[in-house]
Length: 335
Image (cartoon, rainbow, N blue to C red; front, side):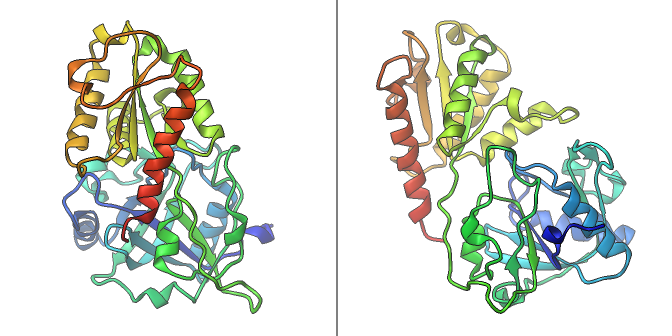
């Protein structure tokens, strides 16, 4: 029996062209549709999102039985919604574990061998974005269990509320929306949720336990930190996922110690990648934050940024002040 809480008639999948040229995420999947008659689209979930198993079972049931279920793709870089003809949804039937594409040939090469929590099978993707009114004002948000991990809850102000704008959807720190037809008493006012800052923790393996404590503190204080030992899932290609996390981050904390200064290996690649991304930011942007875990030298390539000493009494409060300043800038920038 389907739980009442997962009654919905539409799903929205959020995406951006992060590892492809602008517009290629859509176009490469369309090419697979033209070649095979369908394509498989992987759900790129955030670090604090899990598989909402009951809702996915419901969605698959709606598709199999031919009931109403519209699936949209939401390109947040261009504020554009694309309609799809969804045929199926694939996910692990017992465990909330990532799975490879059911048919890798029908998935674009750039991620055809990677694993994700869910895959959507599309017969077609619309060539032009649909009007916002296809979603805005036509649906209300439906809360589902299991989408967020135990330390995060959906914003109660959005539960059973009419979708008021594309901006409202974009400001939510989520990549998957379940929507229903609105009820007469569903609130209609726009609710802009403050963004959860995505924070990448770059560190040496020797400092794992100290960095794990920082990770927990940041989570408890409302940030969305990314740490390999906490966020990588079994079966995922770790190098790709780490660089993807750096690319998606709003800030990078480079954790420094005496041992980290002499450490070689992938952490140096992480740092080079983050530095390249920092060069793309406007001057004055808080993005790279050197965090000293103990008395140690700051590498010359990080010397242009003011560091914070986490081991001092005021260190953590100064760090969160910098992150909050970064979040304020992101929340007030133009859409």
